[in-house]
Image (cartoon, rainbow, N blue to C red; front, side, top):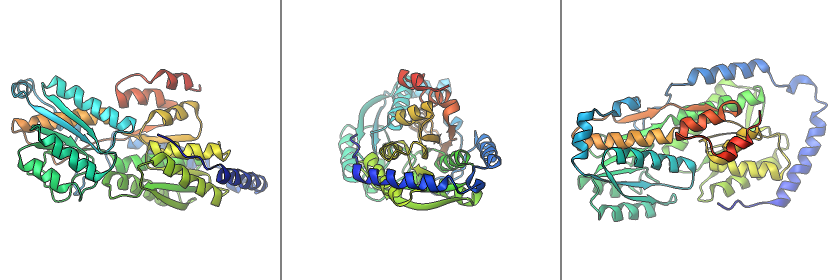
Length: 386
């Protein structure tokens, strides 16, 4: 993905920050980080492990992934069906989407279900509707999908459900569809919890004091709204000495470029900005580019999703201070099992969620293996600063 540079804005930001640094150096000890707050933030991160804080799209209480488990007898019945499945993605441009798809394909293969199509709508609702219609010409028994827009895609999903296709959703559901009737279940990360994790990571890095910016997803997208809500509510409630001085929304599809422009503007306007939260790893890449262009290697960046580029930054202990990671491979496995179970009449909970994984420099290599079920790539391992 091409990242746009704004050299003149970045230069202005760098000059203004240089002046601010000189003035801040004489401001006394009142701006010093509070190590006690950092310790409390770490305690909060330790406590959240294994918990799910989110509710479902309709306020459902989350069920664990284990509810999707299948017995050997059930697996034998599923294999005998020779079923077909399609994966209809909202967006394929990051490591999360790749891992989710890999988890689905791996489990479908174990269950004897053939994947006949994998599509990428690039966050365009009309493209996703077309993808669903095209996939349905192949008569799939299962569609696993994440709607780009809950309203614009609803009728296409309803038609698929009416044709007898078992629908399992990732993270979000189309408007007007009912669990157990129109779709099997929705499987999600704890997106609210991921936002909470990122807030604690930011607070830990800042010592509970400072000024930050927020870059959110400007769309009617349930899970990114949850992340934003979790981050902002936690900062506001738990860390009164951290001030959110500006918020900017980005709509894409060039999320890295849009986030870089937003971060450039923030750094130019607020010379004393200490940190920026970005809604997921691709926008965070744009924030990193803006920070480097402005000479702000001291900027603290927190985000969600353990993508490769933010993992390298974490490994180097540069710019990115921490994030809340999903477990997309495991989500894909869970979705495949729920869909397969529905083929043999097995009931499923309406909402299944998997807990957030707090990631910082200290555990980035172990977290990568947990998230993706494979060792961290060589360039991440070689970047690790001990």
